[in-house]
Length: 95
Image 1: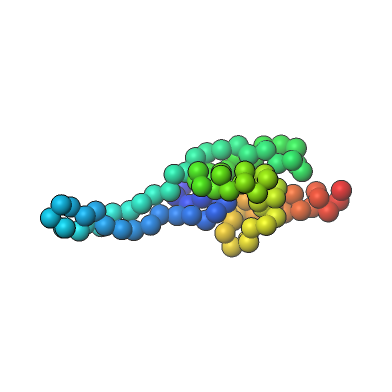
Image 2 (image 1 turned 180 degrees about the horizontal axis):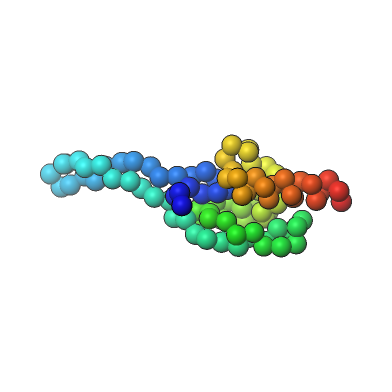
């Protein structure tokens, strides 16, 4: 299971631990990923995704999962999120 947000594409970053003596050792910064069930208004069901807390706040800010998926570029989304995006677009086009 990779440590990448399925909605924002946010992944690990590399940096340094810096001691008091200014010694530097490599370390990784991991995103705060949570397993979350987000409700899709168009589909009328929940979708379970592994999302960073920053991504959760962004989804709420935009107005829900459907709006987020339709506005986000496909390159950032995971395969599961892309599948949901296609389902939402299809459902909205039919309505």
